[in-house]
Image (cartoon, rainbow, N blue to C red; front, top):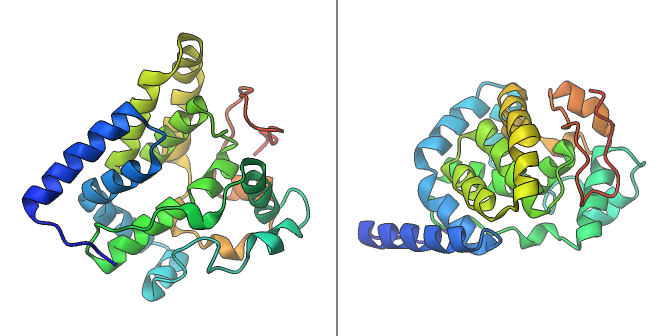
Length: 236
């Protein structure tokens, strides 16, 4: 349900959530609020992009399922039973390794338009799936690079803000890796990939992960990062 805000209340909440996010980028709750409050024009643009594909238009016509994958075509127990190397199995492995659950993703609260709210929720809920597609770990370095990729792919202001906040907290050695290896990859791959929010992932969970990377023009950066138990093939 959308929470109504006065203009003053919206401004104060935006500033407050931004300050907390910069102080602690790991605060997913304030990051979610900041995303809700700053994404209006970007969501309009993303919605128009999604409409360009038949698959995207079908999702927008029903606005369901937005929550991935809890109301989709695969629960985590079902995905664990898929063959190794498939998108669904590797997503389940990613979630299990980190003890993540899909239900933990914050619900969109401050986006009033129904379609825009669906797009924002969908973006938020496929974040972990995109980690699987890009092979980015959930370390500070990996999350910062992932946000840069998402910034290039979506244009959502919160992704730029989160990447700046993450960069400020990265040590010198990892910052060198970020700027020399991961920034060029994130910007290039984000721009060059298919419109990832226009994909109904529920229809691809039993497909080979590397084949889908090729189909959607996603490359894996050629750098070994801590936090992934195995780095998938970079051959796309």
